[in-house]
Image (cartoon, rainbow over all chains, first blue to last red; front, side, top):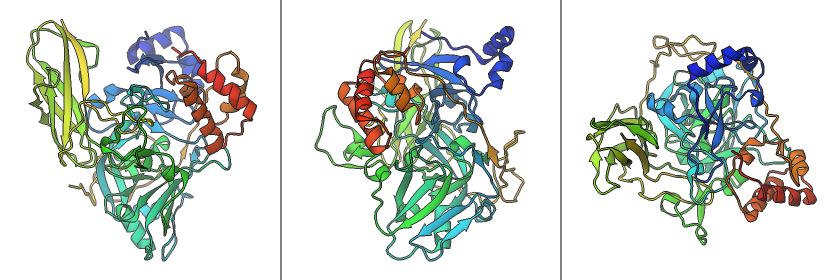
Length: 410
Length: 112
C-alpha cells in the first residue's frame, strides 16, 4: 500500500530534509522518487511513481521513462473539460525523439502524388487560414491495465486521454495547395521521431484521402492557446477528431500522398482491432477479420468520487464527471444507483463541440450508511451506448464499458 | 458542429517562456524553439538467472519500467513479445539470449 502526499506536504518534507535542491538539479528521477500511487490494476503490479521530471510537464504518473509514457492523474479531469498542457498524457513509440527543435529551420514537407511538392516553414503555415476545434485525444490502449484477463502492453489506467482546443490549419488546405493528383488514395504522416535501431519500422500512419480532406482533420500548432509541449509533438501535430490518438502523429514533418494503400507495419500489422462491434471478443476467440483501429466510442467517468472513497450519510451525493461521444457528440449521460436497473438523467454542461469532453452533473438522494455503487453511461448522438460489460481483445484497445464507482457512506 | 474561429483565440493568461496566442491578437502564431533534456533511468532488471541477458540487450531501446509493470504473463505471451522485439523491431539479440530473456521474464515476480 502506498500513500500519496499532497503537493504542499511533499514540498515541506523535501525542504525539511534539505534535498529540494537536489531534486531540481538532477533530471534523472530514479534516486528521488517524489511520491507514488496505486493504480486499480487487477492483480498488480499497481504501484507507480509520480514524477515532475519531464520538461513541460507537471506531476504525471510514470509508466515508462524512455521512450516516455506519462499518464494524467485522474483528479485532473475533475478540474475542467480542457486538460492543461502540462498535465496532458504522453506516449512515444521510439526513443530517438529530437530534444532540440529549431522553429525557424523546421519545415513541413508535402509530397508524393501531388502537382507541387511543398516545403513549408512554420511562419508560412501560420499565415494560412486558421482553424480551431475542441477534441479528445485518447490512446487506443487507454484503460488497458484494467482488462481482465490482463493483456501485455502499456498498463494504463484511465488517464491516457485528454481534451484540448487545437489551433492550426486544415489538412485539406495544405493538400489543395499541393494539388492532389487523380488516383491518390491515402495520405501518410511521419514525424521527426525515429527508431533506435536503423532498420526498425519508422512510426507512420495513414488516412484515406476522403477522410484527410474532410475539413476537420487538421495540423495543430497550438493546444489550449499555447504552442505544443515538445513531448506532445512540438511544433506540429496531426489532429484527427473522433479517431484514436495513434493517427495524431506528433512532430509532424512529412505528409506523403499515396496512389496505393499504405502497407507498412503500423497500418497493416500494428493497431488492428477485431472487425466486430465494439472490437469486443472473448478471450481465446479466433477466426475474425481485423481492421485498422479507427473511430472512438462513447465513454463517461465520474471525476468527483473515487472508487473506494467515502461520503457522508444523510446528505445528497453530488455526482460530477466528464463524457465524450467518440466520433460524435454526447446525447445523454445517465447514472444508476441500483446496479443498472434504473437510470436517471444527468445535466450536461457547456457544449464545446461534438468531439470535446462534456461535463455532466447529477445528484443521488441521501444514502444510508454502508456500501454503495454508482454507474454512469453515455449515449452518443448516433445512439451508441456504452456496453454494460467491459470490452476485451488481445491488444487492450477500445475499452468503453460502463464505469462503476464503489464507495462507503458513513 | 465544428467550432471555427478565424480570428479570435482564447487568451492564455500565463507568464511562460512558450509562445501564447492572445485573444486580441490577430497576428499569426509565433513559435519559440524548444530545447529540452529528457530524464534517464538507471533502473536495471533485478538479479536472477538471465538478468545479464536482459540488462545487456533490452535497455538500449527502452527503460526497464514498463517491463517491470507488466502483469503476470505466460511463457507464450513473453515469447511473442520478445520475438516481436527481435523480428519486427529489429532488436539485435542472439537466439541464445532470446531464450534466457524469455525465461527471465516468465519467472519475473511482480514488482510492488
